[in-house]
Amino acid sequence: MMTSFSKNHNKLSINNITAYDKITIGVIVVVIAMVLSLIVTGINENERDNVQQVKKQMERMSQSYETQLDRYVMNKISLLQYMQTFPDIYNMDWNTQKKFLQDRSKQLGFHHIFIMDNRGYGYYLEDNVIKNQSNEPFYKDVFSKEVLITEPFSDPEKMLTIITMCVAIHNNGQRVGAICGTIDINELKGIIAGNEVIAKGNFALLNRASTYNRQGEYLAGTDVEEQDIYDKVSIFDKEEKDRIHNKLDIIHTTMESGKNIFGSITIEGEEYYAYVTCLEEYDWIVVQYIKKSTVLDATEHKYFLLIALMVIIILLTVIAFTIISDFLKDNKRLCTDAMTGCNNRLACDTYLNKLENHYWESISIVFFDLNNFKYANDVFGHDNGDRLLKILAEALEKTFGADGTVFRLGGDEFVSVGIDRTENAINESWEELQRLLAEESSKLDFNYQISASYGYAIRHNGSYENLHTLMERADRAMYDYKESWKKEHHSYR
Image (cartoon, rainbow, N blue to C red; front, top):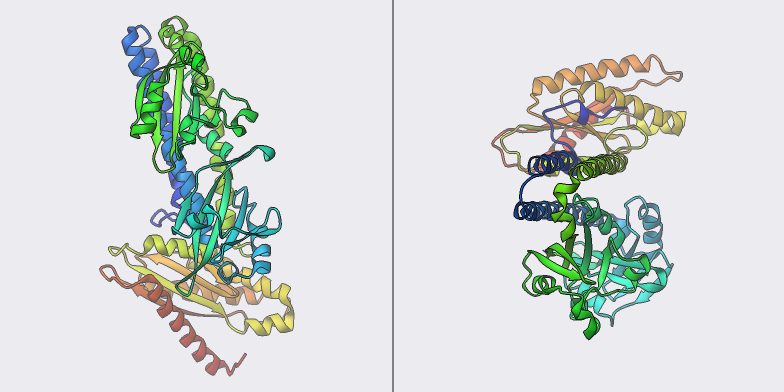
């Protein structure tokens, strides 16, 4: 069943990330097209212009992957914040949490997820153990912040480097622990590598968070072996004799100053142009570098460069759209009620949060539930009860979904949220809904009259009423209607 999000141009998207991803794809394509144009028009320009062009390309790459890294990290934090709202999490019952996490950790894209309580006991689902970490620095870091993003930790034995993200868990206003998720550093490597648009260019992702890591150890890179990444190989001088072959002053300067720098470096006697980006949010730096000979010989290899760039464009486009397609499927699954195909409670909460400050628009909320639904379940069976819910959902999409968005909150409770929808429009949709339900009742193979109760509330433009308060008003109106219906039909079910 199609949801009304795709049918109504005047409503907000449930997920800004989806829209943002689409925009990002367009920006990537436009930027790459611009790079192609610059290379074609500047192919016969002098050496200085070629160097400046490389610098601009690297700056664009830096901005692009910084944006994507921020979006990736914030998306993971948002998922943890969503999970910590469930009672299964904040009640701090290990057995309940274990089942809850087992059902969700894989689909949310974390390497593993674990819970830590206020005493410092952490439940690790992956190893099925509870660890006492109350005396470890990690425990102090977790409970010093509401949101924590750690520096990467390497485990050579497992061939794994991970970053841990933690979000505080609260119950009735009291902090009771933290929910933490880890991601593999190779996912970040993929984000940066996916932005590589300079022919024969390389990058290295380094950690600058601690004194030891200021030695310049690799976290990820395009020119190191997998084993080297986890063994923390340094690109800086390890012995006196190496200093003759390596000159990396701009990398040292960026680590100390935190400023992005473009310049020259020498690695193993080979000269490179390099752009060093400092990601202050995460205490990492990214070094993009390209051989000087490649830049200076660009005029002699213009056809090769153009072909290479066209291939990269195709690959990047395929990869980007694949990522977006997978994300859209996961997001749709997360925000869709599995049985009816309607948007679910998570989608409703997200949508209302986006509309909360839209005071210039009139927002209407209509509540529904089936009459005598428990009776139908008890007498005709739950399969028929599910059938009734699907009938109601489809009827709501045809009526209140035409000028609003329909959500299933749970059980037989549904909600429609509309923008600039009048009371007359609501009443007309209600009459049409009753007609459709009566029509569907005649098609049932068991004796049951499908009917629903409803109630609505409207926050007119210019009003500052909280939308959750508006929800409560609509809910009360629906229950008032239901009580009147029971009295009229002598129903106490």
